[in-house]
Image 1 (cartoon, one colour):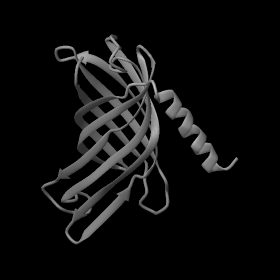
Image 2 (image 1 turned 60 degrees about the vertical axis):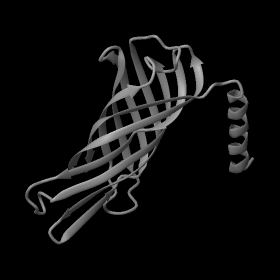
Image 3 (image 1 turned 30 degrees about the horizontal axis):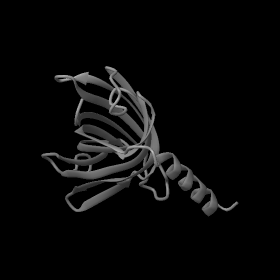
Image 4 (image 1 turned 135 degrees about the vertical axis):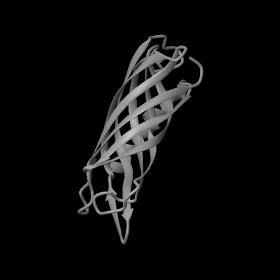
Length: 186
C-alpha cells in the first residue's frame, strides 16, 4: 500500500468515527516566555482547540495551536543587547486532554494535556546595522496541567519543546512556557 492509500484509509476511519461525534471548540489566551537558543522573549498567546473525539466523559482528542506573538524592546542597541526582538511561534498540535476542560462533560478540578505536532516559528533580532533571524521550525512536544481558579474558570500552565530541523546554521531548538486562561462555559 502506498502512503496515499494509508492517508486515505486513516481519513475514512476518522470520518467514520466522527459521524456521531459532536465537534467542540475551546479557546484560551495568556502570556508566555519563549527561549530560542540562548535568547528569551515574552509573548502573547492565543490557544484555540477543536475537540475531535470524546474518548470518555473526562477525556478527548483534539487538534489545536498555542500561537505566540513575541516582541521585546531593549533601551540600548548592541550585538549583546539588540534594540528589538520580534517573533512568532505557531505549533499545530494533536492533543489528548484528560480531566479539567477535556470536554463539556468533564467536572474534575484538575486536568492534564499532552500533545505532539509541528511548530512554525522564528525570532528576529535587530539593531544598528544588523539583523539575525533564528528559525524554530521542527517537531514539537507539549505537556501541561489545567486547574480551577478565578471563580472556577480554567487556567493552564503548558510547556512545549521544539526540536529545530537544523537545515540552516540558525535553526534552533526552542522551549516555551505558557500560562493560559480559558473562555467559555465552565
